[in-house]
Image (cartoon, rainbow over all chains, first blue to last red; front, side, top):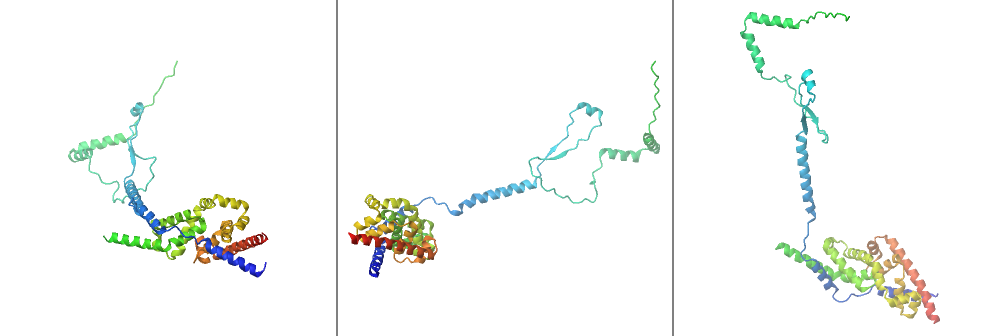
Length: 171
Length: 175
């Protein structure tokens, strides 16, 4: 192929390429575009982007309050020991009914509060009626009565002597 | 009151943008989809998208931004648009092979058909280069590829076209 032919092809190609995208739109393109936008721009319910944050914040707040309240009050259930055998109650010395603190099984264990150290333990309690009656007796009773009480206490402290049981063999 | 005035000013600025660039956007779209109906749809969709997102207010390089948006929308429409672009009579031409069809038609139309027959990866940069005022740097931005790749593809497309045109020239002279 000669140089002239090459140049001719080159120029034909350039011309064809120039016209390849030189297509003009139908008249009134701008107007049609703007009309479409105006029709789309009609008032419609538009949610602001930040609106999703309101329920999220409410949920967080609720969770925070719930967590604080939950942490402040220990979820414990007081359980009293129940002795269900009547006979055992009669024979065995009565067990003290002690309230037992049982952790709720499905609750998370939470940190125990450290109580302040007391100067006297256990804490001083008011004098009971029995103690008050004993004190009155000690102050008012005559000396003989006190001695008798002491004597009775000593006697009760001594071991009980039981005579040996003698059983005759069977004939 | 102030908000209404601001809205009116904004609408006026957007209308100005449409007046200024709609033909350019149309040519970019046409370079890809190759039919006027789809090209106009691409133009409308491009401006509508810009208006909805508000992106048009923060464009730095207006032409590059518009070209890229239009190109993306056009490429999404491409399979449907290309099947519409090939009208039945053109398809019968293609059934002869683009070269034979080109012999019987005028040269410009023949070259257009040869360009249309190129692989998309070569045709698109070549077609965008044909859109006035789009250089290879801008085409690279539009297509999201390297500028060197754009140049290579355009060169390769031109080589293929020149070879085919030389073949056509020979056949035409024989007749």
